[in-house]
Image (cartoon, rainbow, N blue to C red):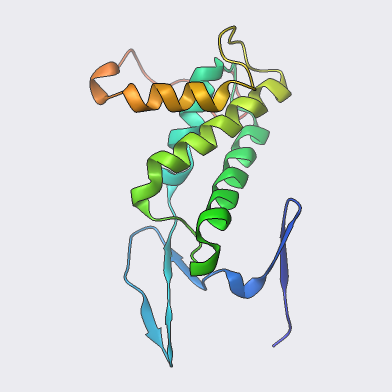
Length: 157
């Protein structure tokens, strides 16, 4: 079998780093021959909480394509940093809050780079500290429904 290399930003990883299967729901590893194949769980829950939280904290006037891409890079790099030895494609769902904070931090920085951040309180340099402090103190009771969602990727909010 030929060796395939996947390039993610400046990182180069052998193709066999990634599992061969990912689904939208959690599954236990599957035994194939003499080894266990880990089943990755991939769904919106790994990107969108951080994308939304970062956009809100940055007071972004829109969610750019680059912000969505930055969220994906943040997830991939978090997974590689924390779980490279286990060969999983996605981190465990139990780490969702940590992933969301990493994604939010990167989205905030990208919003400033893209010129869509309007926040006067959040800066790219303070993004991680502020996001972590706020996320640790928020609960569902801190939110209310104020109307229908508006905007979409690449459109003004």
